[in-house]
Image (cartoon, rainbow over all chains, first blue to last red; front, side):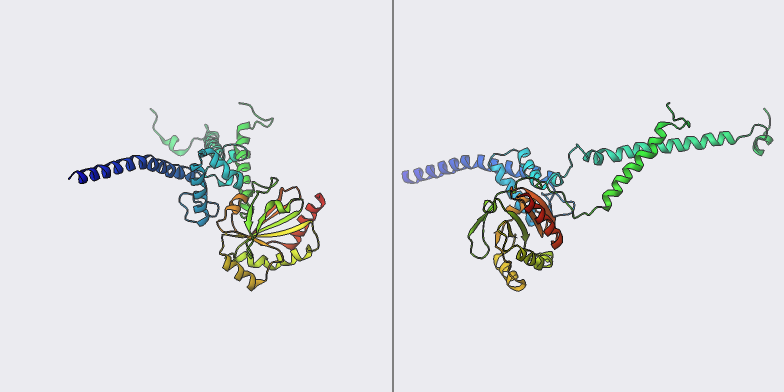
Length: 151
Length: 183
């Protein structure tokens, strides 16, 4: 009876200790998986059309995700890992081009185009109104105005 | 509101000129070759590597080519365009077989060695070694997008030019001549 009790106690202790030791490791793995997703969503799959690294099933993308995992395990930060890929593939590898240099045109060009197009439209409509007013001849009013009863 | 001498407001000119300029820039972008991708490594030191040779597994290092012009060609048996440029590479490297200052090295990228060897026996062996980059890690270090890709490394170890797609002999000869002039 005593033997059984001790064996049970040892078993429970092992389970608890094992669980306690495994928990932080599992937590770290989950954190790394979350970070891999976060980083690979910021990067473009170099061999795919408009697909990020996270969604891509290309073997190259898989290898790049493996590199991210290794670098995270080695304690490198998100920015360091992104810089690692930018140093090799250039800013092309970024899902969102940086807001600097010629890329500014990509970010703000369409907005400026819309503003100027709106201004041009407003200018065009105003010019049409002005022309309509200029065409109105006070001495020869249109028939509708001539025939309208005086008040 | 400020106007030009003809009474035309400056903002009206901007309304015409700016969108035209922007559309012009985007239209120019559409005319450019989409396969011409910028390389972040041109002008920078070629990444170091140490990979096993395809036939015998002997390690070959990037530093083995220090002081020489190195033509580094990424290829694979599964790559269609690699077949197109295969004869060009053989012919090109043959022209420099007696020149100690120019070397060629193949990088068998993300391929199976047995498939690569079969490819070489079918299409003719390169007169220069090829190293195995099975996982593509060296390819990633060079920023390889798709095959074939050829990097021209100067005697100073810097990448001078990167060619995407099947290699053109006359173009390659010009680049090699320029790089040899630097040594």
